[in-house]
Image (spheres, one colour):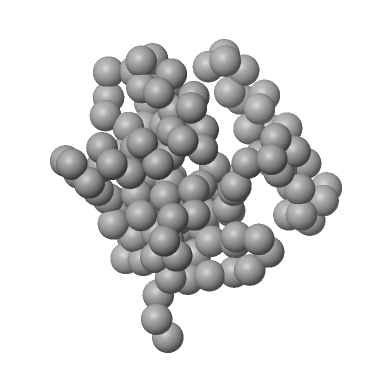
Length: 141
């Protein structure tokens, strides 16, 4: 699977472009997903990434797994350098704040992620890095 990453990402981006953001590979697979937009940490230019997400108690969980690749996803670096972001979830654009979870809370939320996408546990075995887990919450106007 890691060797196919560039093809999967390119195909998903093209599918979303052609469908004007209405369909992604994750939609076809029946998995909850979002488009995360966060300013690039170097340029400040908004960067948008399709992500598997898990709605959880009115918030969204995302993992910086990158299919278990040793490289940290660029969106993780950008998110950590930002004050906030926006998502499109079920065609609704939502401004969000984020927090990275650690320790026992991370372990609990990791299990929630795995309950939706068991391959997260497989990804964990492919890398030596700790896969970061983020909670995204709607910002209040």
